[in-house]
Length: 186
Image (cartoon, rainbow, N blue to C red; front, side, top):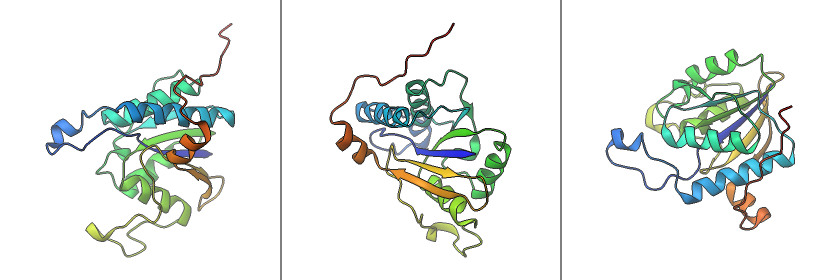
């Protein structure tokens, strides 16, 4: 399985009230980041068998926009294992349940999405490493809109690539037009 791990795109300033913050949408820059990520994935002819997202609005919007750009037209699976407070154990259980798919996009939040990525490629959880509570520091930095590809044909997974949205912006210039593939529905 190829697992594409995407941190949600830019969504403006975090709200102090967690109830309001859950509903925070992507901003203009975030929507452009999604188009750039979709364009990048299209260049490699990536098609997803499944898209899984955190239940928060900004992650769902990111999953939807990137999925649309890459021609994904099935329902997005929502999982609490990708929510900001999710544990590595819950994430690993989710990944085990996705083994029948070939290409899966997951969209989540920092700091746990970085910890999830680290656990996949190290084969160890943060608990195994002796890291607990607030001292847990992600080993891999994922900026908003960054995407990584991990090959999970064996454990631990192998990080194939990680692309920062600033690199995509530099490669593509100021692309705002859709990069969506034309797909025949006959």
